[in-house]
Image 1 (cartoon, rainbow, N blue to C red):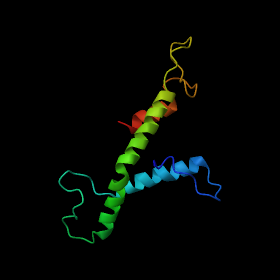
Image 2 (cartoon, rainbow, N blue to C red):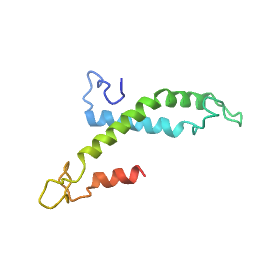
Image 3 (cartoon, rainbow, N blue to C red):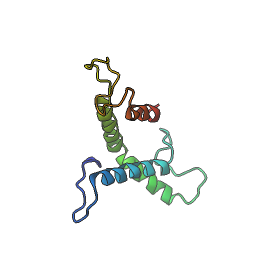
Image 4 (cartoon, helix red, strand yellow):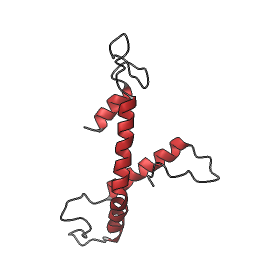
Amino acid sequence: MSPFTTPAPRGGITSEHARLLRCVQGIRERSARAVPWEPDTVGLPPADDSDSALARINDVAFYANARDEVTALAGVCVDLLFLHRPDEGTEDGGHRCLGCDMPWPCLTFGELTRLLR
């Protein structure tokens, strides 16, 4: 099950926005802690023989979910890009965003462009 569609915990008043934010922040934190991936080093302890048990646990946690999480995040980006696009059916020839009706390019599209470079 995608981390973005996991049911919210019962008994809590956590909003859907807060739950999704925690999910994405968790992905970002696991990604930051994982050793950079290289085909010949995945799963191997660091060469410096430091206390690598925690590093290996962090790597396993990251890599175990990476495919599903990256796929889900890419899906979110695709959905945002389908939503935030120029409204070419308007009189001004696409100078407004279809999703938020802001002048094109809208702030959401600008931020996606900046983050995905």
